[in-house]
Image (cartoon, rainbow, N blue to C red; front, side):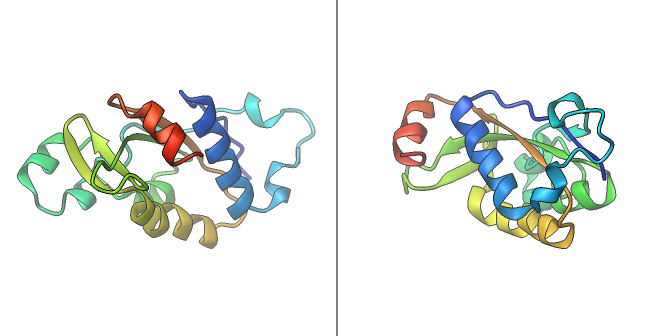
Length: 151
């Protein structure tokens, strides 16, 4: 089993990511199987702007131009050995209860749909896997996210 570390830029999102990990993975995944290193002492492969990929671009010229990744998040996790997702997020101002996955000014996808489609699917298929998530709020919506989404 591969163990990984997390690198989260916002403490509240660290809690959300950790709760997500605890909810969808087995507690056995956190055991020290080798007895030598703790969870935070391992390294991992993390993809930068994981959601900004050619799959979510869906043929859109500007999204393809801004894509950082060739493969979908699911393919990154399944085929490329990625165990950390770096996600740029912002509040969806048309529905303040939702988050959007973005890369600079380009809006790639709905956070909840992409997590269900890619991350949750991967974790359901790989119950012992651990995936760290690095959230970066790219605009001034951090306070709104804390009061709306995390309230």
